[in-house]
Length: 256
Image (cartoon, rainbow, N blue to C red; front, side, top):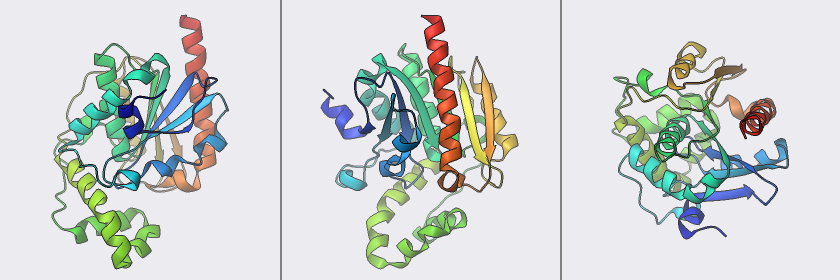
């Protein structure tokens, strides 16, 4: 039985007694947990697929936005407390990669680190320092979104839809802007990186900087596409994550 805190923050797309390993997915800025609703179809049946429900969207419209990204990570780490008795693998894309990393650090500090961290389309924190862009108007935010994802243009062209989605997008972008980045302690779990070969925000060279943030293994996979490569390349990404999850399971079994 899930706690009220977990129920508020975590959506369980597939999770039963056979799922000893749980993949916890973190959406991008302005994104929703439902971005991961199809992932159970591409992953083994013994893998739980969970997604983080950020405030201010979907069925959490009435919930206030956190004051900062670190506060968001604090809340999510608290929500995952009961789940840490299982093997957790964290996956985050774009802003979600930064949030997943901050959550991984908090879980490690509490003595229950994740089994692996998977980061996608986001530079490591020490490569973000000094690279902030101030999105002081909605127009600048929308321009930035459409620079990477033209498929969302009809949403912002419709006044009603625009007003529906903009508060969460605005809050996330400003939260990302305020995140200071900088050095972080290394994790005790492996880190797996993913990016598109045409992503200007997270080039393969920049993504390799995540290797500095683990005491153990790092591996980078580059797939075709831009910042949202994972939409068209979902099957290839999930195939690689299946391999990561199998490696994680074998490593845990060998250590026990």
